Amino acid sequence: MAPVVPPFTAETALRKVKIAQDLWNTKDPAKVSLAYTPDTIWRNRDTFLKGREEVVQFLTKKWQKENGYRLRKDLFAFTDNKIAVQFFYEWYEDKADGTRQWYRTYGLEDWTFDDDGLMRKRQMSGNDVAISESDRWYKDGVDVNTIEIGPEHL
Image (spheres, rainbow, N blue to C red):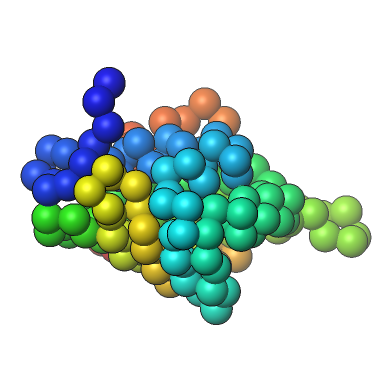
């Protein structure tokens, strides 16, 4: 399949978002980093990164902490070479007392692409909310794209 490159249409922007979603759900930092320019610039909450090597290091550390990571990205808006997404992901942390705490992270991302379709800039803002096991959306075997996300979460 040919790479999805700017200028984006509604169809290609949505495709780009779902490709990114599927790529991040592999939790393979080296593979994920290849979707970005070699000199990509990131802001992820309060962390600033530059270049694929820093992205790999960041994602490796992230997925060592965020166990059970499952992500959904939804197209929010787009222009010729920019895409904004709303995302929701769930993960858990094993506590020292042997219990498991689940979280849902809500956020927005702002992406800018080069002419080859590689992301040269990514800005992410997100919030982690503790949830109970019973409140989880993305349980084993569930397609993240089929979950109905109500207006109280949007």
